[in-house]
Image (tube, rainbow, N blue to C red):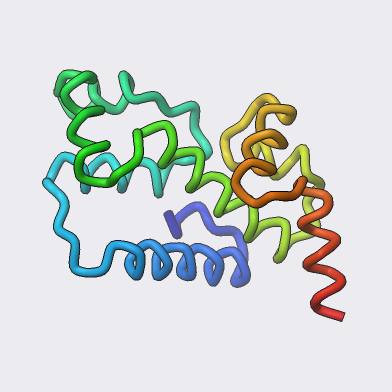
Length: 139
């Protein structure tokens, strides 16, 4: 994850995301396969990931892996991936001056409309409104 960082603020944001995930997990133990899946998401979220692709890389059945992930994490692979991407986008909106289309692409969405929809669903506001609110609160 950190090997993709380009500057200090991006490294800081990535470390904060890792700490946030660790806090959310608490002492929860995950199976080796789920740990591997989460690592793939956290390090390669900007790629076009799919459960089938990850299952193939881990040499496991996609249906089995999807059920295992949901059972242990409480969310589907796709939900976890989308939530993680939006969390990264939140940090980029707050800490960078990239335009929203670039941020959508950076976090793995080729379709910015889909990114807007997911972002609004998770945060309750559009990416532009989120950025404006962040700018106003820092004044």
